[in-house]
Image (cartoon, rainbow over all chains, first blue to last red):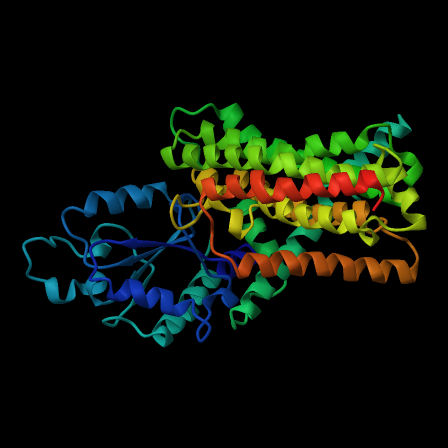
Length: 142
Length: 312
């Protein structure tokens, strides 16, 4: 647990990637930035460009149209980068498990670091996931 | 030889790069914290901006888009930071010793203050991204619109100090009466507040790097070290522009206890004014900004120049 891990754990810039979600999770992301939960106090900022991001926040079940784009965005993210899956659809394909359109779960497409279950996840669940993610970064080796 | 070492020290360490960028990052935290408190949030800890920049500078990959000129793409952030560091070096050194400047250093400062915007613009055009070039063209239009009232407002302190274009003379002439104490000084200070808001890319005039529509504009393809150096340049501008205003309107930085405390209050007042304008206004469109700057702001600047000529 050196300086590098501490810095990386305390400054996570998040890029929001919606891979075909129902917009419920996306609204809940904005909830986390509101005065009550205020994720900025942990150094989390929502950025618009993938080139500035340290983490991809992926909502929705990856469908056939978005899978190539998810791969492309993951390649464009400057490393070291994290992938956080937000919501039941992304974690397990949820309701759309047997759909013709969602061929693969997300963690078979890109490596995933954290899952936040829920439909949509509560902000408390997000903060719990964040604590686990920070612990994971702090214990990671180069 | 000794002189060269001294200049390099001045530029890189004390009033220059390292000092002003760390002050700028700290003041960037004040900006984030006050913004958070205005929105009834808690806000980040004081070291947040430092670790953000350290993360980008040391631990992240720097990606270069395929087919762009590497020299231009990676050179522009360095030029922006160097321009901002040079501004802070000149302004602070002259504040410490008003006799030290040269004739026309105010004009040099005006040119150097444009360098970060110009290099941001060129960096945006170089990165071959449609949103980046859109942001860069907006930056160019914004520069065209705010430079005219900026320079007109700058004439008032020059007139008040007996037509001196040396910053040192402007500081020493304010020993018997500040520029802000006169009616024309107040008007030109108001014009200046709007112009620096646009110069720093703060909210009513941040259409060049609008995060929600053209996802941070010219910065979009920058990552890692290049983005970190751009951020340092921006931090230095945020630090030095209120100091520049204090120099022009409030008689410069005084190096005795009472004067220095007054300077800190003046600095914080300008900073809070900027932050409150930033947090209580929506982003305006680029044509509205041009109309605003070439209309009412330029007219106010002209009125203040005429009043200063008449001696008010």
